[in-house]
Length: 419
Ligand code: PLP
View 1 (tube, rainbow, N blue to C red):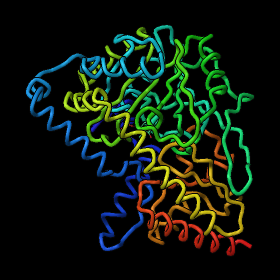
View 2: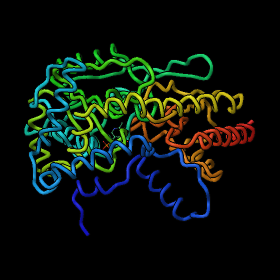
View 3: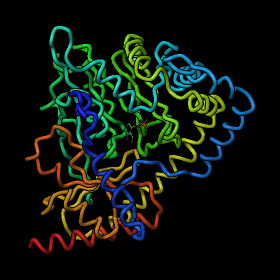
């Protein structure tokens, strides 16, 4: 089989996807082993959330079902969902948006594919523009979406060590280069993997610098308020002309339906809608109808605030307490979990690589994600990028406690062996 350059690029298992394949293979090959799987980005199925999806599914079955599933729709998205988003964001945040500012995509992953390939790469004048990640570590999915493999440039953060085994990343503006060579800027806020929420000032500074070069800034709000609201600190959104605010309904419990939403200036939305129309016509209408119903009824807002957020807030506290109790006297630091689904653990001066640590933990029955894949295009000589692991909060309380014990025991062995 002969593959095109694009075919080869898209055939490659990059970053976290190769780890996920290894985890899948490990689980399949060892069906008798009871692994604690803290690798997943899949949200847990929370019974109260599941109940709401079922309630609205039944309501759709009784009303619009045949029309929803039996007809093609607009590439921009299902109109009742677009209206619901406009109404919600204008009422809640006073953004003054209209239907022209919205595009519904097949999950937010495809939104990043569309945006990066529309705004970045080589143009008709042979000018090449790259994707800039202004603060790494960040979501590895951005690396996979770019058809031209050399299009991601990332900026390493400034690290603030805090008291009691905590740390926090800040945008390193000294090394950040925003100029005409950048086609789009992307960052997750809250961040997957670190749980960081960059401040409003930091975000404003990035957006304003980008605006001078007419660069869109995609703010990936997959974990943010209002839905699914996995935010454990104060967080304010920023809405400006060159911002594309990106939502996902996956972490609110609907990953299988693939619903992502871009809210942005209509000039961006028009380009992305045309791209989507060529790519896949539109996102699944059933999922869109389901999300529309939950927003219009108010259920999505209430669920996010009263069920989903408190659920993961408890998990976050359990992980923090477990690590504080179990971890040995070595230089370890947990990133402030300000939002999202993960704990991000940095072991300074780790004598082995994060991938080797991943293998050792796997042998102990614990699956986590090694951190290095969250640092695309980062110089490997920066040791911090191979000293971190990502621990998912999507597990039972008992599993999280046990995981902390296994991590601690394994690190003691590693540090003792290197004394
Ligand atoms: N953005 C971030 C930060 C994520 O963590 C994920 C998935 O884990 C995505 C986007 C992709 O989400 P979706 O299911 O909407 O494609």
